[in-house]
Image (tube, rainbow, N blue to C red):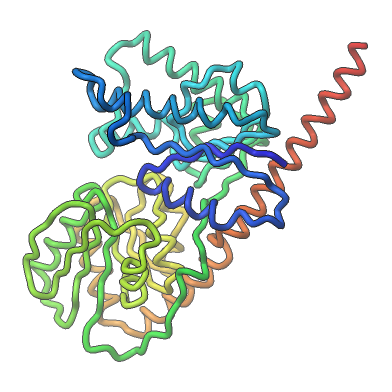
Length: 372
């Protein structure tokens, strides 16, 4: 089955793309065409346009990359993992059944406002036009695979999608790569890990505030972020420029004892799933679709967005309770194996795509016979 996979490389979506590419195995019977949106080509024609804002250049680059990829068709189906291709016209999409996967709808993203820097257009007519395009794209999709119940609810309530064409499907991670080491109960230092590119939005500053105030001892705080932060203490370590599935990043997960992400705003959390797969208890803010990830009190703790007090209480409780860390970490790993194994989720997604395409082909044949 020849499928075009339109994949973006934005932050967490890059991880989704890499995981799909690595785990879409030949036994699934799929002939994939990877249409990758990189957003920027150093020294490219578009990038060298004088006087054009970078934001416009990236959109133009996106259109060029998608157009070039679609020229390798025809496809039996499209799998679209980038809301940025809402610009595709109905005629282009109608050439084959298409399937959408996303962690957020445009209206949900706009609701985060300054946290993501996404706002409605200043021109009401333009915003109405965009919304109508998004409505049509979602309503005409053969099937939609939102990452969370939160995103699924918006598809139904905000975009009028038939619930029967929605299947919640987390993107998943490579369970084998994110192995769960045996951690001794007694450890001289408790390693706390934070992974968030956008340091403020992900709540990294809240962890630094906790570190300055806490009376807890014998801990190290490891901060993985793309932002340059001065190391404020000898037991606080900052890591920049670590990419998805980076060996150094994986090592940090293996050596950690607690994962903390007190994010102020998130659509979902691939890092949270990685931490679970590594056998870590996870402290995660409940925002967007993150509430689907953690079983509060079993695999970790859910706190309110920006809840510094809740973060302190849960974090220090786990630091002081090695048995609880171990039991929660084991439960997290088992839950990740059940719900977040990317190979299982890819296989199930492919099965649903093949089943839906088959039904559509049968319906087309029936309608063709009726008109003859």
